[in-house]
Each structure stands twice: as structure tokens, then as C-alpha cells.
Amino acid sequence: MNQTAQYTALTRELPSVAAVDLVTAGTLQLVVTCPNCGAQHRHLGLGLRRSPCGVFYLVSRTEPIAKLSAA
Ligand SMILES: [Zn+2]
Image (tube, rainbow, N blue to C red):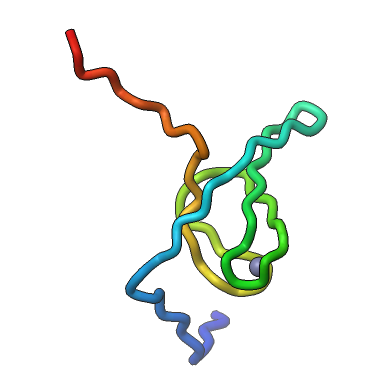
């Protein structure tokens, strides 16, 4: 077992960052501009992610899929 005493608590307000689709060779990646360091990070999926610089944020799509409620 490799339990560490360090515990990273999530901040109360999780920043949400808009992702831009990046299609590489057969793979879809999501590029976000980091709210922490300002660099661009790549992720493989949406949702709660941890950036390489050590912060957490929610990766969301730039154009969210809207559900049409109208009949
Ligand atoms: Zn960063």
C-alpha cells in the first residue's frame, strides 16, 4: 500500500474551462486554456480533470449539446 498523508482538497468553486476539439490521428482530444498557468492543456475527456500544473477544473464543451425541449 502506498497511502500518502497528502490530501488534495478540491476548491469550493471549481473553475469551468471551455474545451476546443482537437482531432489528432484517430483520437479526439480536448484543448483547454488553463485558468491557473495560462498554458494550453490537452485532455481526453470532459468533466473533472486535473491539469499538469496541479489544479482541478471542469472541462466543458465550447458548444454544449443542447436538448431541444420544444415538441
Ligand atoms: Zn496549467
